[in-house]
Length: 522
Image (cartoon, rainbow, N blue to C red; front, side, top):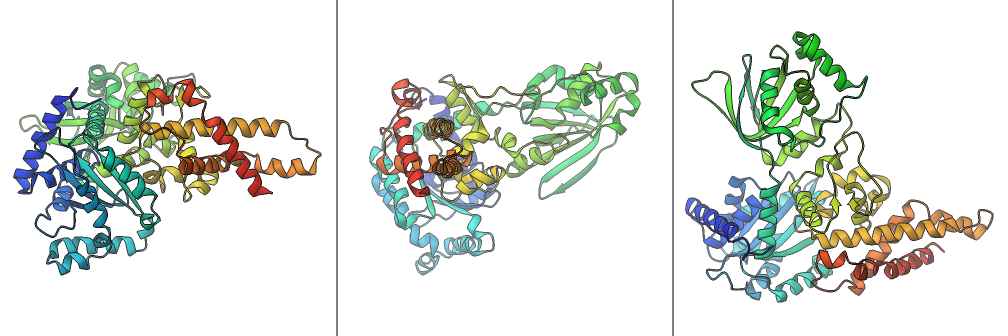
């Protein structure tokens, strides 16, 4: 997917950047940095513009500084928006970003240069990093450019990330093609209902707080049925599960029966539904009716479909909460509003923009990546399916800070380690490499385990290394080899990686990784 194939998206970006520059009275580069933070990193617009409004001299090579509390990270951007779309970002842009690192970590450089505004913001960064939760915050520094990819900068980025001097910082570089692809994927993944009206059947009450704004009231079965008839599964795109059926004796069968036979009691017997929307506006001339934009039922799929299957009776009312939520907490709303049936956090993460981008990339080569649950059970153990919980364990095996949790606390991978394992710049090729390495390591572990003799003392000791956790420790060794030997060819794409010629390469690497593990266990 290239900028030439999607000129409309490039034009959209240009228009959005121009509007941000006009409204915030900042330079075009800084406005582009703000746009990237808003549309690619999902940062609140006010926060992004505030972080980009440090225009002036002595900026130490920094265009945007942000503290993203919901995702526990500090973001520093150097932005490049050339007037000529064919112009590469100059290497000096990257050098300036890297050179700004001491100033980012010590605000005195900005203060001494008379940049009090930047120094004050960076002092907030220091307060976060040095506070009780500072160790949980990551630092991401990136050059983002609307120019073509610079191989020189890409190589410099790889070298900088390997430097022990910057071991606590993750550097990244995005050029126009990566930005266009991410933006296009984000737009295509927004499959929620774009706009409709919702009529309540009773008086409603309002509430507001750090979460945003909300309205609560009762909605008739007929109104709920109208929404489902009109929008179908799109109504639930923000949900982590679709309708699981109405098997005999199950809760959904009982909901359908209640709505059919005693609809007047449905409100008291049902927990209700939760809708998340970007905006909720009252329709002035129609009391108790609201216009919802970009919305989804994030909890209540089973209730909605059951009411529909019961004939959408108008006197079956459903308690309904509509939340105009801040983007940063939507994932948590989905997660914590789906506790009546246990929902693993990996299932919630599977619908976020990062996973949608990876899902789209793998779909193009015929692989299902992190498929959403539909029905009572999803298909497992298929070469054409990459499961999110398993790939997270594989990725964590290559990370020294996360490997223990890969073995013992898998849930932590989607809470405490999620940003480390799935940064917004993660490449599908990187994910696929770890999938191949992980599967190969597991196959070799099982093969070696199957030929051990239970009465042999040496084999008994080796069997301890060949337990389930042996897959992750073996993969850790293999990942270190890949990192040191740089075995994957530079610039290889996902389609090429899926060919037998490439996908069989991990076998030798895993052999050496396993050998290293067994030597360590001797």
